[in-house]
Image 1 (cartoon, one colour):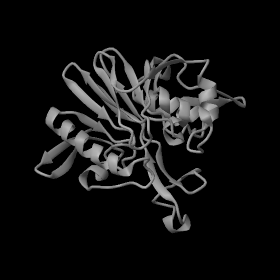
Image 2: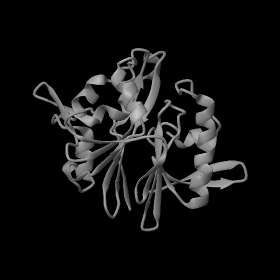
Image 3: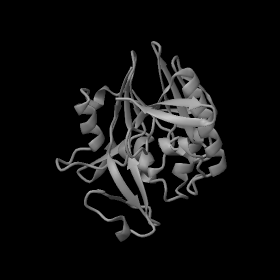
Length: 257
């Protein structure tokens, strides 16, 4: 198994839910009052049978008008068209923006050859247009143009890939456990978005059920430590890939790569 963090950088987001690039070496956080500061790290995982993307970032482009996520995949030694699976934890914009790309004034799927794995309940919420956290035009673009595999509840998607409805960050948020020839990785989306939220107990106001998310982090952390899973931290400021250690009541993270 090969794991690549496809970091898209840091951003501030305020009540308008617009994501504005933030460079801590240049920008002053005091000039963005009321903003939440986040880091965005989609992931690419190569297994024996699949090339997998876990969530797709914001869909921002570089100076050559190319998606950052596409360029990062190329930098890892692959072509975006080689991606076989897109595994989505949920569909908030900072996780789903890279599902589409704008070309000549029209949105197109970013990974037209890949199977997109999405919880049906999450899709229904996204398509309802009732929350600005979701950009409905993304899913309107996808619905008739890509292969979507809708998951429901928890289960096995295919040998080596299991999914579990966690329901803390959004009601239909899902997490993924991957096993491949003895290697294991866990993607917790926004249930386990950064190491710090595991190391210290933390209830996030932006979660659908913050207490449940906090409790799930401990469950996932213990399983990862006991069973040897490498964890992928989508919103990590640094060290987005790590191994969890659990000693008594204390978690620690050993960076990988």
